Length: 578
Image: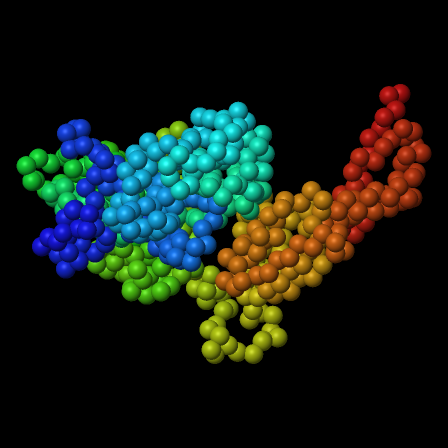
């Protein structure tokens, strides 16, 4: 069912299947005989209500214009394609909105004002647009500053829109600052950038900032579906979801992909999700889930065969890794929040993910995620990405088959369930001994000494962490759940975080590991070893047998002193060539 738009356009009623704003057919002033117009331009928002996913910004601007609290400078930031430049032009139109009945800034741009068409086409004499990516110097900014003092020709305000403003040089920013701080009443500035951190704080502090967020996948999919209705294009919903996922929240990117997808069918034929996945170079998400199921169920042959089939069909190993990570994240959300967690997936997919979530603990899923995340870098950097992906899947199979820390503790010899744990037995023959006893003691409450911490790290074969702890860790206090240490001057900045993560994984409890450079700690393992070595050397120097030996062999030197058992033993080198 159709209804008339106030500006002469026709759009779907809400009860006719559209669950978003009405879609305008073309930009103002666009001619019908100019040939095909890409969707990203054809459906560029013409009023603020057309912007999708930016409700907070629209509400703020609406309130500002209603209360006549209009800023003199705006900063639009966000990823590509979310509407920064479009929003800048809409603000320029709102500032200069004028009709027969409205002669003041107005956020409601219906019907179009006398300046709207020219501003939308970037041809208005009082609204200047500049691309800072190609005009970065002081001279370019001076052209703007020279024109600031003159009143607008026909509009209410002179508006300067500077895109990619972070590309301006330091001198250009400095030249802009004074005018930006005290602009004439008839001048407004609107900046847009994808790199907000590169904009000097002195400029940011003089602007009203709006962070345009990525559009949610479901909202973007619905937007694409409405455009398909307007274009009489029949595209499967699952395919639109794949486009929205690939666009990563960018409306412009999604429309460019939809443009490409629509041409895959002629004469009203359906564009299938499989065709769109082929176009995007994506593997079938259901087949990726097949791959993950085989991996987590430790079906090695099925896992490797399925990977090779998908690779032979054109799947990109990096895309496969991203999808595997996405599924592991979804499984973890289901485990944490239950099957009702909002995943944006089909019900059949949610059911399969729920089944996988039931088979693994939350701690186990965390380890699987970490393994896969590390594997993503391996796939990116490997000379043979598919072989790297095979190795990642093999590691995931191994990790999925390991018991969690809580289960591993119950499997240790001599362990009993906490609910019926007996009193400590003083009979040494009934308790586990050797490495098993040491592991059991360390992993129930954690290490209590520096030597205990080193022993736990050594048994886990975390060589790099062991070396850093031995060299840089001066203990202050070590107790279950909390460690304070003094780092050496050359200690890695993340040493405390790495120790905490390691202990949390080993003990299944949260640890606070605090590095306090100003606190006096005991000696490091390395410092202790050097001190003990020096003590042994000095003791050997005083040993009567060594003194006598050196008297018999003039020029002999003590090279090393083995760690004593009963008494020091020394190695001498005779430097007397005669």
